[in-house]
Image (cartoon, rainbow, N blue to C red; front, side, top):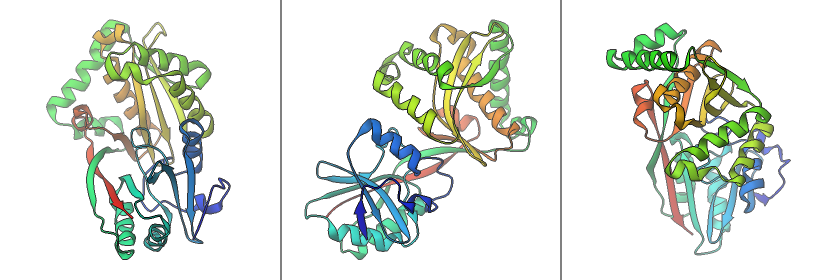
Length: 301
């Protein structure tokens, strides 16, 4: 095992121990996060595995705090041996906190800590919301219950009556970032406070550096943006990372129409999965998603 800070390591080429985690375990996402959020990188590596960690005070954790990073997972194989070696190398009193782990990632970490003589167990602390996509929009509507199918159509009609036919367009950051950020800042409460200048720069970096990152903007018939989303796509899935809408257009349900338009676009593109990522918002489950449990492991050396 070696612990280093070389971002060029080939360890990032290993597959994550959990499937369907989007860009969150990859070099590009984590390096963008590190550029904006800082910390002392600890790339813990063996010939078969890599864990991208960071030290904050007396705590060792995965890179990417849990409110910005929806999934964590080690890369490669032999994770339990790597974790055991890491744990035994830490100073006594060092805290370990590994969050946002799918079950497949949590199990070998617990095994490794236990083999090092450190009592540890995984506890569910979050869930992502996952929607398996059918072959076309009509089949998607059929799999919703009657009440929710009516709600989707009702909100689409409301939007059309107020703003005309909706249009969803992919736009690059030079066009979309200011729209997206302005909508965030116009929102009430925590959502309005979230989009600081520093956070806006983080989103710009993600769009520029992470493969599959994209902004999508929803407009009415006159072309004026009323909602926007930032997400990631790969061959099999779309991951909805963040969204916002114009509060002045709230009467037309732009947020709801944006999400259903994104689902429709993912189906049209042949994606098999729509990942709403973390958060227990009820609308996700009304639209057909199911929970994917995520676990946290806490221990002390």
